[in-house]
Structure formats: structure tokens, C-alpha cells
Length: 171
Image 1 (cartoon, one colour):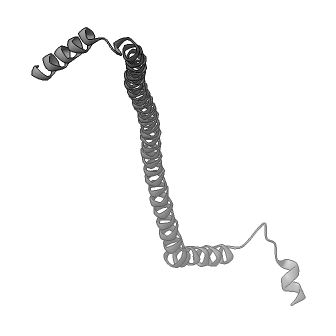
Image 2 (spheres, rainbow, N blue to C red):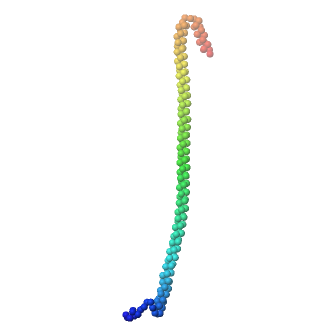
Image 3 (tube, rainbow, N blue to C red):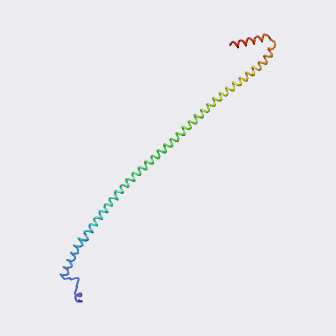
């Protein structure tokens, strides 16, 4: 047996060894090709298809995200414009309310001043009428006293006064 191992030379194989090695290799290759290479190739092809579909879906999702972002930006811009418009309208409304309040206050002040002037004029007229009445009463009192003093005992003057009284009574 030792002799057999000593005589083995891998560089110079005999024809039977080459035949059986080739036959076993071809048989192994056919079996591996049918049982391993096909499923591996199909698995790789399936994996490539899955990866491609995932890439396509990712691209589609990216496009959708870009569209959503554009829509969000547009909505945000619209919201900003609406906010600006609302603030402008609120400011205009505030200024209008302030202007109306000022006009109302000015009108009320003018009315109060006019009413006060009318009241002052009425008070002035009433005071003047009272002063005139007082002056008239005072003049009458003075005239009465002067006339009493002058008329005492003069029959011509008493006749004149009686005539005036009768004329006033007739009117």
C-alpha cells in the first residue's frame, strides 16, 4: 500500500483518473447548475427586481414628497398672505373705528359747546330780563315816591293821572 502512494504523481495522471475526474466534475456541475445555480440566479433576479421596485417606489415617494412640500409651501405662502391681509384689514378697521370715535367725540363736543352757548344766551337773556325788571321796579318805586311827593295836593295833576289811567284801561 505504501507503494501505491509513492507511485502517485499528480502531474502525470493516468487516463482513467482524468476520465473519472472529468465525469464527476461534469456531473457535479450539472447537478449544482440545476439545483443551486438556477435557484440562486432566480433569487438574484428576484432580489434585483425587488430592489428596482423599491427604488422606483422610493423615487415615486420622493416625487410625492416634493409635490407635498411644494403644496405645503404654497399653502404656507397663502396663509402668510391671508394673515397679512387680515392684519391690514384689522389695522384699517381700527383706524376707521378711531376716526369715527374722534368724529363722534368732536360732534358731541361741538353739540355740548353749542348747547352751552344756547344755555348761556338764555341765562344772559333771563338775567337781562331780571335786571330790566329790577331796574323797572326800582324806577317805578322811585317814580312813585317822586310822584307822591309832587302830586300831593295838586288837582290838575290828579286829573291828568286819572285821564292816563282811563286811556290805559280803554286800550
